[in-house]
Amino acid sequence: MAEVLAVTPSGRLYLGERWVFDPWNWRWEMLDAAPQEAGQDVDRLEALRLLGQGGECRKVPIAVIGPRDASDQQIELAAELGRALADLGLTVICGGKNGVMEAVARGVHDAGGLCIGLLPEGDWREANPYVSLPIATGIGKARNVLIAQSAAALIAVGGQYGTLSEIAFGLHFDKPVFGLGDAPDLPDMRRAHSVEEVCRGLADVLLQSPRLS
Image 1 (cartoon, rainbow, N blue to C red):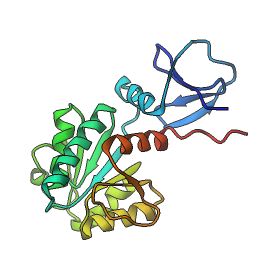
Image 2: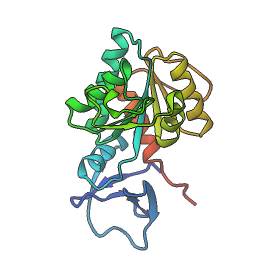
Image 3: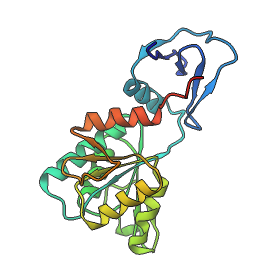
């Protein structure tokens, strides 16, 4: 039988009559009794948007990675992605510098979202002007490990050696890694052909159904 997701007027997300979503811990919890409040049926993407915009979710970041020397197409795609992620109420984390990083931060900023920048330098002022929360790590390229480890999922837009290292770390840490545009196509990566497809993939990952017994 197909899964039925429903959001109630109070903002609670239910899966059938057995599960309710805990937005602080990002997991499904089994109900002791059937929901007492009727809800509106939604798909996962709309459910994620309603949860994110409701202000009750813990801000677990989604990483967007890509080259500093980005092409015009990569920059346009990254900015579109940033706007879409902010519209879903998701927090974005990136390397805080130029190219794809600046473009996604600009998209997030323009849509009123939050973008965290993990900088290789020791001075937070080295961040691009669209990063809302700059964090100066002072550890150079080793900050790529922190980006991959801290994110719930990673999205690569294009890719050079630095991006490849973040992809590899993400896969090593068993994180979902999406490839968008001309990103490298590596084993276990999830290929997406549009920003909307990435967003739907994130919704599937973040709201993954519990294993039903």
